[in-house]
Length: 263
Image 1 (spheres, rainbow, N blue to C red):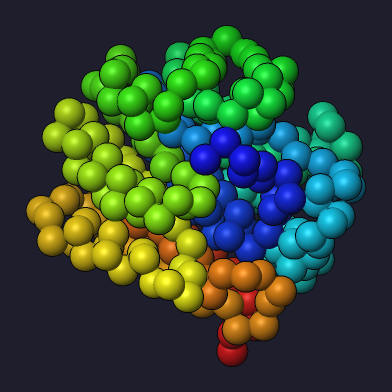
Image 2 (tube, rainbow, N blue to C red; image 1 turned 60 degrees about the vertical axis):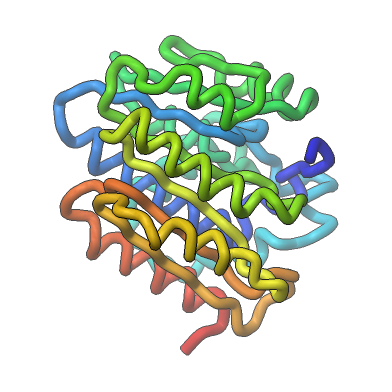
C-alpha cells in the first residue's frame, strides 16, 4: 500500500475528472459565508512536476491537463483552472496541483484543512508544499485519522477519499468508511474517486453504497475509448453534493469524455 506514488500519473484524465469536480464542490461551498473543514484521506505530496522523470516516463499528462488547456474545453475562470494557474505562477509552467493545493487555493481565512498521508516520502514532500495557517498535516492512516477527528469544528465540510486501490479489499473498505463517516458526520459532503478496471471490483463497492439511504447522492463515470491508460475509466461517487452544481458537473464530465476519445 505504501508503494504507490502519484508523480507518475499527475495531471492525467482521472486527475482532471477528480480535481475538476473537487474544485466545483469547494467553490460552491466557499461561496457561502460559513467556515468549513476540508479533509483528505490520501493527500499525496500536493505538488507535481510534469517535466520530471516520473511524469515524463508515463506521459499521462499529455492526455489530460495538456490538451485540456490547449483545447480550452472549460471556461478560463473555472475554479480548477484558476487553481492550476495559481500553482504555475508560484512554481513554474510544468507545475500541477494535487488536491491539497487545489483546496488551499479555494479555501478562505478561517477554513480548516486536514491532510492525511501515510507514505513517508509523500508526507515529507507534503509538509514542504502545503504548510500554511489552517493546514494540519498528519502522517497516519487516512480512514482512522478522519474518523478520529469527526465531526470536526467547523462541522460544515468536505471529505475527499482517493486511495490507490493497489489492494482489492480497498474497494469495500472505501464503502464501509463512507457509511461509518456519514454516521459520525452526517453534514459532510463526501467525494470518492475510484478506477474502473477490467476486474470490475468497483461494482461491488457501488452496490454496497447504493443500497444505503445516503442523502444527496451523485455518481459519474467516464469511460476511456482512446487512451494509453491501463484503466477503462474513471468514477466518482458523492454524498451531500452542494446545491446548484449539476450544470458544472456535466460540463467537467463532458470535457473529460472528449479528451478520452468519446464522441
